[in-house]
Image: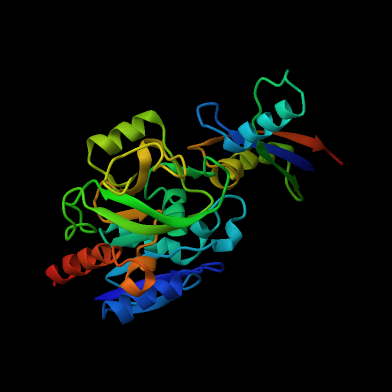
Amino acid sequence: MKVRILVSFKDSVLDPQGQTVKNALHTLGYHFIKEARQGKVFELDLESISREEAKTLIPEIADKVLANPIIEKFSWQILDEK
Amino acid sequence: MKFGVVVFPGSNCDHDTVFSLKDVLGQDAFFLWHKDHDLRGADCVVLPGGFAYGDYLRSGAIARFSPLMREVGEFAGRGGMVLGICNGFQVLLEMNLLEGAMIRNKRLKFLCQYVHIRVENEQTVFTSKARKSQVLRIPIAHFDGNYFAPAETLEELEREGRVVFRYSDESGNITEEANVNGSLHNIAGIINRGGNVLGLMPHPERASELLLGSADGRVIFESMIETLKSRI
């Protein structure tokens, strides 16, 4: 089973990297970009674990390690099941 | 006094810190390997600057799970003196021994330069030998030093006098221009509620001898030494 976890800054946190991306896009003429936020993507390949267990353990991992809850939020999804 | 300086894979200010404490200030300073489980009787633990675990994931995020950090956490919980410098400060934040988090510097540049910081609270065990509002000239060297904390945490830190150092100009004025990394409230260093854990981004060990360009960092180490001596 593969899962994808998306970690990004909370809306209340300034994202200097996202702002730079936005400015660069504006410079290139893409003025319709209103806001840009940058984040991180993690893809984990799991073994010997049920879907139900993943539902408990993946948020636990995201909260404890992959994201810093003070500044970041996360979302996740199961990509496939074989 | 005994100072244990924790060495992570990627620490690069560990030797400078031991040198400052041992050779410059005449203390018993030694390295503590992050995989050990023994603080070897240290009176104070220092988490030095560097890039622990390459700062992958987030600065300090993986170092937090090093075996020795369990002992460091317990030591801090018992009131033991812990100093985190730069990357060490980031580790303390990730460990939740201090509140807040670091994000990338506002102009997305690695900053390696002298800055001025104003002592905002000279009544801590890390600043007792400093004068009120004393301005220190100490170098910084970091990519992620842009201090962030939620509004209620900031208010709490301010109210409780736990902002210990703030970026200022040479005369001690707290200006936006002096706030090189974009930290909220110009915060350069904070202390925990117990008053025994301090984190700061500037490197006092790089400013411990005039030969290095500044000896202003010594006042921090000297305050710590005096405090520890007074406890014997």
